[in-house]
Image (cartoon, helix red, strand yellow):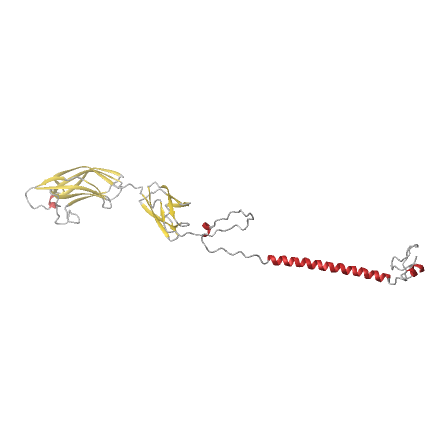
Length: 330
């Protein structure tokens, strides 16, 4: 059936147009005359319903927004917790833990650095043999910490572990040597001294026998020959000396008068220079000659005299002295 209003083709048994809603027969249109503007009323009802829904949506959005703003406002204004006073005994509280029985953590040791008032070591003078080696010393201080402020020479090294210092000393191939290092705790400083003996053995000598020959000649000069049998050690290729010093029998020095056979203080002395050609060198008969005239005795009467032998190293250090040998001079 064709709608007269909009020319839409509808089924034959349809009473209303499926497009515009108009009645397809005269009877239908008449029966609906008492409901004028039916479609308009329907649209208005739909519009009112839509407006109500929109109002509800807007109200809901406003309520949700208000709740969110209120929540944000509460978060942005947290309750202020007063800071602890600057007391060295303050205890830090673990605010992360939610258990009311949580134990507070004492952070006093972490926040306080105690200034040192003293520092000492278990050993402050350390001696090594020529072979070197290792020694451990303990550092004691009431300060929070300490460190080595002045290091050692390259023949000795140090390492720290806890409150101890380990010293490693190399073998010594030369003369005796010394060094030091310093340990510091705040303003407290401790110096520790190190020494190491030499691998070179100290020089020494032993006199085995002394005898004398009188009225002997050297280069046609009459005098006396003193013979010394001795051993000298650790003076290889060193310039040493074996001297005979002269005295009166009572111990008074025999004085020189011409500066030929004498010491720096004027005593009569017959020197003999030697240079050992072995580390341990033996002299079976070292001959020391002195002219009779160098004794400077004017009297023709016999005079009781004596002498003793002293052996010196290259540094003029006395290594050994003999007993006195007595003799009569005519």
